[in-house]
Image (cartoon, rainbow, N blue to C red):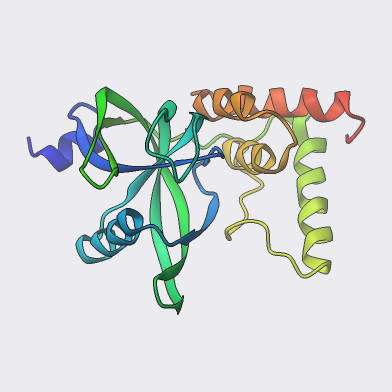
Length: 210
């Protein structure tokens, strides 16, 4: 079995570069980045040349641009580069999409330039499940929120919109809910999409949104 095939099946570690951020990336989410540090400019260039993704992990301690005292979650999501614009010398505007969840295998390590690397195990994608009938109010509320944002000239999510997929609906809500990063991380890791949507539904009902 090849390393790439094994990684796709979730049984062989895959070596990737990590991009710690003060946010939680969800599968299917749009991720805009402004890249100017040398280590990340090099990373974006390599990912584009080799057609590979990098991993986004949520910071628990330290700064995104820091090198010392940085701690981050051991699970994250791969980011696929969709577009890159060089608006000025030394600065890239990068647009990415979250794809597969992963778990770090072993200990992350750093290159001399400070770039974090890790062996990771890819996690299964969500099963596609229709939202339960009791959760349809939360589905409709997301559709209404998207329409309202569109009228304001904002396109918040990557198309196509999949309102018939419980995991997709839950993930989009998780992106925009004003909840702590630790709570978003736990929701992202839930392997059961219907449960993730139920928890979102409970939160929205508690806030009187639905």
